[in-house]
Every structure is written in structure tokens, then in C-alpha cells.
Image 1 (tube, rainbow, N blue to C red):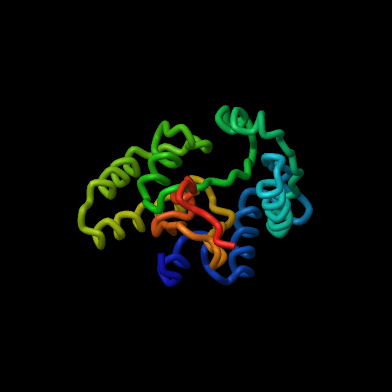
Image 2 (image 1 turned 90 degrees about the vertical axis):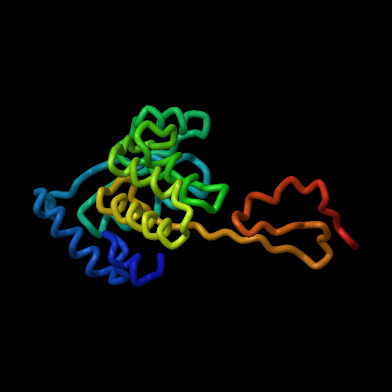
Length: 197
């Protein structure tokens, strides 16, 4: 989404202090405040990308009357734990190997999807996901995708903490590498790549 559309979604206003003030008001309406802080556990896989992101989240939650404790989970136990929905807050990284909305929506947000760890389910959203998947006109599809993104944000389906950035770069002596246009992950077979020293 372009920034002017994105910033209209809940949680995406670029005014961080306003967002925090709004969040504190919500917490106060629920009975929490500086003298009555919500205490939670934030679970994260015990590897740097998850753990470090969770530490930042813990710090941010303090700003809105939430005191949280980090629970690190060994990798062998992490996915069974999130699939059981055995967490209060779980910080998970969700990668997408194809730059297409279908991959993300069908795996993470439709009712019963295997990676729908929060258990979010909206039959109306599922219908929108199907519609955007079948839409051949790219402008109409983009409008549907943005409508889906807005509904997910408004419903708090899986709050996005941050977006990772990735890129493919190489040295001039790397030969035979085809850089993909739809994902940084699609060109990793490397059978035709060689070094020219």
C-alpha cells in the first residue's frame, strides 16, 4: 500500500506518540493504567531474529501499561506450541517465498489455515480472499487486496510488529545468477552459479 493509504489503517499512523496515547486510553477503559499494569508473557523462538524482535516488543509494550516477560522456546518446541495456540502473545516471523497475496492470505489468515496461529476466522474475509485470487484485472485485484488488508488490521487478526526487508546482491565475479523479480528466495538452487576469480 502507498503510505497515504497505509497510514489510515489502525496502528499505522506515523504519529507514534498519538498511537501510544490512543493505546493508553484503550487500556484505561479496560481498567489498566500506571498503577494497574497488565502482566503478560511474550513467547518467542530462541533464535536471534525472534528473540531480539520480542525484546523490542517488550520495551514498546511498557509504554502502554503492559509489563511483559520474555519466554524463549527451543526451536524443536516452537511450532508445536504455536500450532496448539499455547501462548498469550507469541512473536512469530512469517516469511513469504512468493511475492503474491495468495501465498500470504491462504497460509496465514483463512479459516483453518495451517499457519493461522492466532485462530482468526472470518468467512467474509475468506470470500474476499477467493475473489482477489480469481480477479484477472490487476487494479481490481489490488483494491480487493487492500480491502482485505484493512479488514485484517481492523480485526486485529495478527498484529504486524514490523516488516523485514530483504534483498539480493552479489559481487561482480559471481556469474550465472538469475535474480528473481517476485522473491529474494526463488533463485537459490545455484546449479548454474559460479565464481570468476
